[in-house]
Image (cartoon, rainbow, N blue to C red):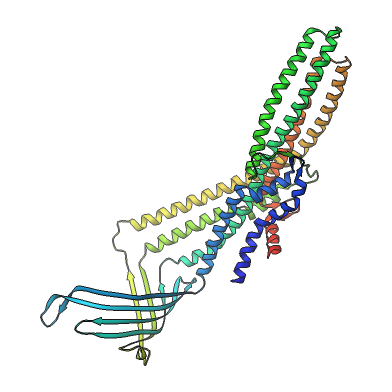
Length: 506
């Protein structure tokens, strides 16, 4: 019981470690009235608090208890069967040999019984060993009052379906695979939660960047419009240029209001996903990226084939289809069952004698069931099971090919994204520098309105492109992790990290 309790604590520990880390970081998250989140902190919060993570943990625990039930089925079971009392007072039909008639007689009796039974499944042959002990009491009332005890002090036996379907053999193949798949599925679900957290993170990051850009743009438009009014008074610019500046100010104001709405919507989406208060004010810090990380497509494919729970699921589906074929095949043949037991029994009028000088009890039963005419029902079921197996194998191969293609394409996208980020970063630096210089030149009268507007648009576009490139890079990386369940940054399977956390908790 202590070992079992420790294991439950260890499994729960996977889900609680992140919570402990977050508590230690709480002082770093809040800055004034804002909560400052990095991508890593967002993912940690999602793994601990999101509804997606809660659902994944409960699905895993259901599989865990299912596997424990399978393991328990391989151990001896002890059952106590009791009937403390059964009273009968009824009129029943009875046959009398003296009169050769069926007559109705009143019967009044009290019964009680109890027994202990031990069962042990034998996986190799699919049979069951049993060991039991019984005690029964009977008291008849009326004209012939009588008391009897009967006992079976001990009986041991074995029951075997000789030519039938062995469910234990198939469970031994399928159940461990199902549990291993459930563990991998939990890790993949956690990676999927990380991916969703990243999507919400970068949606807010983009909305935050657009809001900041349009806020600055509105401030600049207001400043430029006031400068334009002063320059128009001294005839330094034409009226058309002043109207253009005014139009830019109006457009900047409208764009800022739209950006403010989108920012609130994105912030609400992220706080809801993280199960935070809906009025939480979040500010994000954009992540950097490992500039030296390279992922090999061959390595990614190898890890996907070894770790991906969908591929394990295809193997499980094939085994279950083969199990059904075996069951239908055995059912189409004749069946033979043997039950053999040896023990002791005794009957007496008092409890003190019911266990005295027990008599030998031997039971052997052999039954055969032979289907003669069923109009092809069994054959049809067997053929249907074979066809389902063929379809399952084809679907499994198609699924594996799809996963392989997805891995190769995602790895290719990821390796390209690094160069795209570098270029987007360079473009952003150039665009910001060009806009600052163009704005300065406009203010001293050396640049026109069109040049300034174009420069501002390029700077805004470059900023959006940089965030989009970062998003594509990290989403590609999280997708590769989800497909392969492998940490390419530290070059270890994600399952090893889970096992390490388990060892800490245990």
